[in-house]
Image (tube, rainbow, N blue to C red; front, side, top):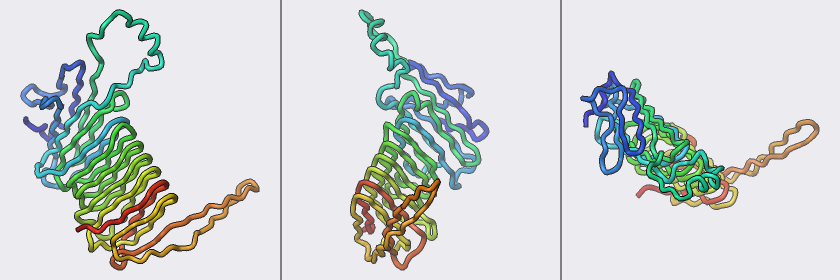
Length: 291
């Protein structure tokens, strides 16, 4: 399959009822190839071999990003779960209308758009209508700005760069990554394992309903800022935690006073360094030394 040339980097594919149409591209430059039931999109970079940035924002679906030895960004997309029906509220009436009939077609398509500019790749879909499953291969030296809201987890493997990863209803998992990371979710776990970390780069890992489990190289220098309201903190690093007395912040508005207790645990890895913040409300925090 030929990659999209750098001078023609915007394309849109629309899949409807199993029919595929490639738009804004000559016939000699296939945009999407069907392989094993998946649709695949290959995007060439303006500056192959140099670091890039991947931007993905989903409403519904999962995102998997894997670093590999190639020079292009390769996007595989498939549907996930059932499509959200705009007539869900009128399902009873619709069922009555369909009595005695059988379905012969389904509006189960999705749109996929990819844009590239100066090694920034932007991937978008109509995931507010249909939850999708995105699997994206990127060159190993690539930064990420990716997020989803529901119906899926986010997994990142073997990528080196600045990683900004956000979920709401699902897990965030970073596996064998390098660089720095800011990873968060609301309802799910945050796990990360690092091959190496960028010296002097702050990092943050947070969730509300879930655990935080981070594995760092044994030589990592960091200042830890940790907080769990309903859990414990565990580590196999040789560190001394500094449990500071709670800070009480008192504010007044309209004659009403409000007290806010700020209770964090601090510690240093290998003498200290850039701040690594970990915060959860409902579970434990694990800080592991890479073996």
